[in-house]
Length: 56
Image (cartoon, rainbow, N blue to C red):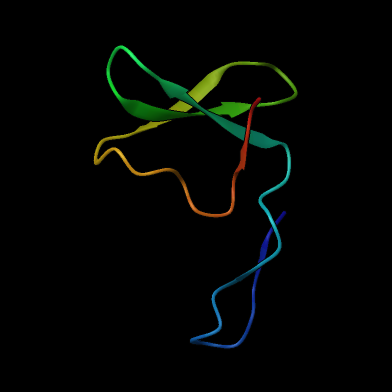
């Protein structure tokens, strides 16, 4: 799991066991659990999630 460092430094490393993919129909980013493959969350503003790896 990603850790938070000192205040102001932000996240250290990537969020593990998560990935994100872009949905071209809705033009939004979707976060997915890599263990189960279930979709977890959708980003409403159209920008990718921070610290989550992108699927190829």
